[in-house]
Image: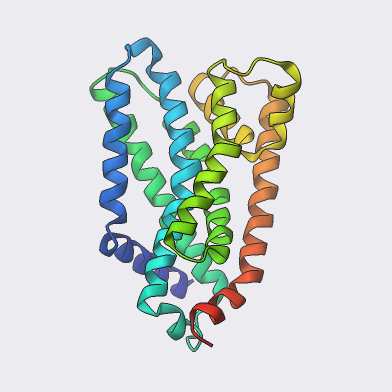
Length: 242
């Protein structure tokens, strides 16, 4: 536990060093700009869409960015001879990554409340952000393992966005209406992610759909973590120059 806490604090320090936290604030300001353009009647709906896009894409990208910088600094060479267990490292990085997502959530909730005079249900969104963010952080690990360089990492994230994130977004705003296509979207983890955020914002999701989404993401998160854990040694050896 002491190693985990030390690693988590270290990860937050590195996020400051790599300008990840300022980038998070910048993205949050961008989302605030979008919220400021709509009538307060639509703030809650747009809020859930923005959080959906932010958590599904930024969680993957941010963990990839920190791994990329650590690779440049030769961090993995020292990791190979340190007493730190890989599970502590992965969970610590996942925790710090979630803090970035939660920072965006808090900033947007504050903006919605103080500027648009709309009260956003914090606890419902908190649970959704943690579950969705953890899954996509583990996915970010797996993508980073296979990315050859930073450009390759960006390409992977963009492909994921086009294949998984955008179709669900289009369905949510009414561009995809065919029943077959809508049902096929349930195979995507991003559909479960959107369901959780929609439930947090409006509370009109059917019980079976909510349970299915939570179960899907919980199992996918466990599977993603175990896979990230299993493949970490090979990644560390490769990046450590062994």
